[in-house]
Length: 256
Image (tube, rainbow, N blue to C red; front, side):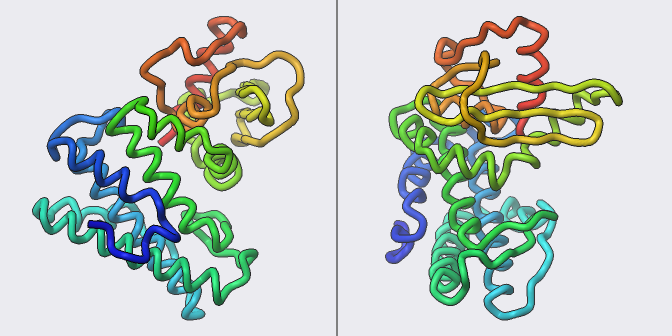
């Protein structure tokens, strides 16, 4: 059971928990290297780290983000222990995020994984990853599609997480000094998401629709593409960009 008081700050744990409980811990997921249990350990570790860093700012003594080795203790737990830890860390993050919303300016900048983010990022990032990793468990069910399609999911993916999301794909493309890969991801009624990569780095931004799109899709699919995922039904996205451009853009969108 999700602890009382969590829902106001983190409304996503209940559907995530139901998805996890409907599967075996060793079941595979759409996140190809992870089982259901791995996903749960990852979410537990992130909840703990998000709360730890935000609490440090509240205490006036900011700390650096730990590596993903922070998840190792949770991976070694028994299933009941891991469940208890997940619920506890969600409750703790909700408490710290609520305190930060009351005591800190929303424009307060905090370092997270080598980049500067603002206070609302911490709860919002946990929410986004709960939605994304629930999709890793369920695929394109109605709950997943509706949650992924929320406009804030696109904004968070682009503004708060976009550049790190491109790094794996940019490294795989390894563009030369004069090479540049660029793509436009378009969803009707919304700004385009423009991604690019060259030898100096990768960029991602929101921009008014202009010219031809590289990929057109619904909003939920676009978020999945940004995170290196693929919808179960490929007819939900469309492209007239040609195989070479499409291949490069899809490779850039490798996600984590």
